[in-house]
Length: 81
Image (cartoon, rainbow, N blue to C red; front, side):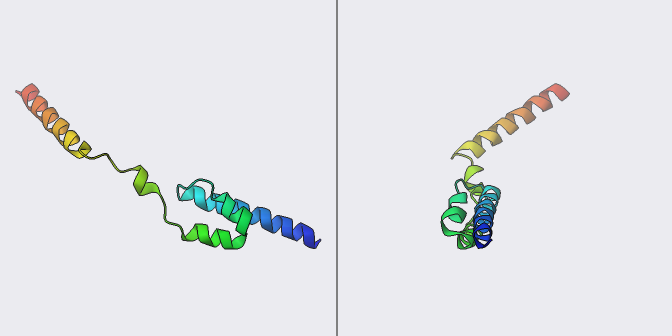
């Protein structure tokens, strides 16, 4: 019975670490739960999300979008005449 409790606890910590890591945009966080157990779940919970790194634009892209918006506004003005 004790062995069953250990296996369920081990599987639960693995799943919890995976679920938390997925929400934060991280991969392979299930390993924390698998190898370290519930302490690994706490570690994953303390990790910062990676969303801001995925959504940043390359340098100069904002200028290109501003230029496209300016050109579109000029075309709209010309069509309105």
